[in-house]
Amino acid sequence: MTASVTGDFAGLQAIAAKLAAMPEHLPEMAKAIGEEAIDLVKQGFADRTDPYGAQWADKADGSACFLVGPTSNLKSGWHTKEVSAGEVTIGPSVYYGAFHQGGTRKMVARKMVPDDGAIPAQWEATIESAATEMLRELLS
Image 1 (cartoon, rainbow, N blue to C red):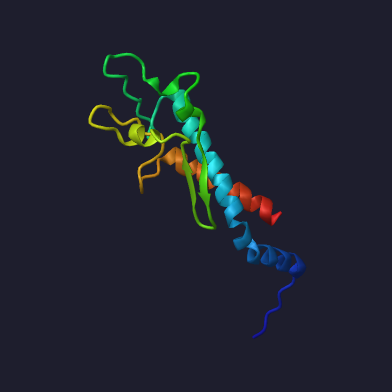
Image 2 (cartoon, rainbow, N blue to C red):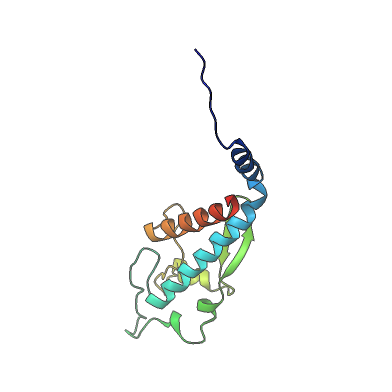
Protein backbone atom coordinates (compact mmCIF):
# COMPACT_ATOMS: atom_id res chain seq x y z
CA MET A 1 0.00 0.00 0.00
CA THR A 2 1.29 3.44 -0.88
CA ALA A 3 0.06 6.93 -0.20
CA SER A 4 0.94 10.24 -1.67
CA VAL A 5 0.73 13.60 0.02
CA THR A 6 0.59 16.91 -1.79
CA GLY A 7 0.67 20.40 -0.41
CA ASP A 8 2.70 23.52 0.19
CA PHE A 9 5.95 21.94 1.35
CA ALA A 10 7.84 25.19 0.79
CA GLY A 11 5.50 26.86 3.28
CA LEU A 12 6.06 24.07 5.78
CA GLN A 13 9.82 24.40 5.35
CA ALA A 14 9.59 28.15 5.98
CA ILE A 15 7.67 27.52 9.22
CA ALA A 16 10.19 24.85 10.23
CA ALA A 17 13.03 27.35 9.67
CA LYS A 18 11.28 29.94 11.85
CA LEU A 19 10.75 27.38 14.59
CA ALA A 20 14.41 26.37 14.41
CA ALA A 21 15.38 30.03 14.96
CA MET A 22 13.00 30.36 17.93
CA PRO A 23 15.66 30.00 20.69
CA GLU A 24 17.31 33.25 19.61
CA HIS A 25 13.99 35.04 20.15
CA LEU A 26 13.35 33.70 23.66
CA PRO A 27 14.99 36.65 25.47
CA GLU A 28 12.83 39.02 23.41
CA MET A 29 9.75 37.01 24.37
CA ALA A 30 10.78 37.04 28.04
CA LYS A 31 11.20 40.84 27.93
CA ALA A 32 7.71 41.24 26.42
CA ILE A 33 6.27 39.02 29.15
CA GLY A 34 8.12 41.10 31.76
CA GLU A 35 6.55 44.28 30.39
CA GLU A 36 3.11 42.67 30.66
CA ALA A 37 3.87 41.69 34.26
CA ILE A 38 4.87 45.30 35.05
CA ASP A 39 1.55 46.46 33.60
CA LEU A 40 -0.20 44.01 35.94
CA VAL A 41 1.73 45.44 38.91
CA LYS A 42 0.68 48.95 37.87
CA GLN A 43 -2.94 47.78 37.63
CA GLY A 44 -2.63 46.44 41.17
CA PHE A 45 -1.52 49.88 42.34
CA ALA A 46 -4.45 51.49 40.52
CA ASP A 47 -6.92 49.02 42.06
CA ARG A 48 -5.08 48.89 45.42
CA THR A 49 -5.14 45.11 45.26
CA ASP A 50 -2.65 42.28 45.37
CA PRO A 51 -2.24 39.96 42.35
CA TYR A 52 -4.90 37.65 43.80
CA GLY A 53 -7.53 40.40 43.95
CA ALA A 54 -7.42 41.03 47.72
CA GLN A 55 -7.69 44.69 48.72
CA TRP A 56 -4.53 46.15 50.31
CA ALA A 57 -4.91 46.82 54.02
CA ASP A 58 -5.21 50.41 55.22
CA LYS A 59 -2.55 51.82 57.51
CA ALA A 60 -2.68 50.97 61.20
CA ASP A 61 -4.34 54.33 61.97
CA GLY A 62 -7.15 53.53 59.53
CA SER A 63 -6.05 55.97 56.83
CA ALA A 64 -5.74 54.86 53.24
CA CYS A 65 -2.82 52.76 52.13
CA PHE A 66 0.18 54.96 51.35
CA LEU A 67 1.57 52.95 48.43
CA VAL A 68 -0.46 54.85 45.86
CA GLY A 69 0.45 58.50 46.37
CA PRO A 70 0.97 60.61 43.25
CA THR A 71 4.77 60.64 43.67
CA SER A 72 5.26 57.08 44.88
CA ASN A 73 8.63 55.80 43.67
CA LEU A 74 7.50 52.28 44.46
CA LYS A 75 4.46 52.61 42.22
CA SER A 76 6.29 54.11 39.25
CA GLY A 77 9.68 52.44 39.47
CA TRP A 78 9.09 48.88 38.26
CA HIS A 79 11.43 47.52 35.59
CA THR A 80 12.82 44.30 34.17
CA LYS A 81 15.91 43.35 36.17
CA GLU A 82 17.09 40.23 34.37
CA VAL A 83 16.11 38.66 31.08
CA SER A 84 17.31 35.33 29.72
CA ALA A 85 16.01 32.75 27.28
CA GLY A 86 13.80 31.11 29.89
CA GLU A 87 13.21 33.69 32.58
CA VAL A 88 12.43 37.31 33.28
CA THR A 89 12.74 39.02 36.65
CA ILE A 90 10.92 42.25 37.43
CA GLY A 91 11.39 44.42 40.48
CA PRO A 92 10.95 47.85 41.99
CA SER A 93 13.59 50.55 41.77
CA VAL A 94 13.48 51.10 45.52
CA TYR A 95 14.78 48.75 48.21
CA TYR A 96 11.76 49.06 50.46
CA GLY A 97 9.48 47.27 48.00
CA ALA A 98 10.49 44.00 49.67
CA PHE A 99 9.16 45.22 53.02
CA HIS A 100 5.77 46.00 51.51
CA GLN A 101 5.69 42.73 49.57
CA GLY A 102 6.46 40.53 52.55
CA GLY A 103 5.37 42.69 55.46
CA THR A 104 7.32 43.28 58.67
CA ARG A 105 6.63 43.06 62.40
CA LYS A 106 5.12 46.54 62.21
CA MET A 107 3.54 46.46 58.74
CA VAL A 108 1.20 44.05 57.02
CA ALA A 109 2.15 42.74 53.60
CA ARG A 110 0.76 44.50 50.56
CA LYS A 111 1.76 42.14 47.79
CA MET A 112 2.53 43.62 44.40
CA VAL A 113 3.73 40.45 42.65
CA PRO A 114 2.56 36.83 43.05
CA ASP A 115 4.14 34.49 45.55
CA ASP A 116 6.58 31.92 44.20
CA GLY A 117 4.74 29.11 42.48
CA ALA A 118 1.25 30.57 42.76
CA ILE A 119 0.36 32.46 39.59
CA PRO A 120 -3.09 34.10 39.70
CA ALA A 121 -5.43 33.36 36.80
CA GLN A 122 -5.29 36.94 35.45
CA TRP A 123 -1.49 36.91 35.45
CA GLU A 124 -1.39 33.50 33.79
CA ALA A 125 -3.85 34.57 31.08
CA THR A 126 -1.96 37.81 30.40
CA ILE A 127 1.41 36.06 30.19
CA GLU A 128 0.00 33.34 27.95
CA SER A 129 -1.58 35.96 25.69
CA ALA A 130 1.71 37.89 25.41
CA ALA A 131 3.61 34.71 24.56
CA THR A 132 1.01 33.66 22.00
CA GLU A 133 1.05 37.08 20.34
CA MET A 134 4.84 37.02 20.14
CA LEU A 135 4.76 33.53 18.58
CA ARG A 136 2.23 34.71 16.00
CA GLU A 137 4.47 37.63 15.08
CA LEU A 138 7.55 35.43 14.79
CA LEU A 139 5.79 32.82 12.67
CA SER A 140 4.04 35.22 10.31
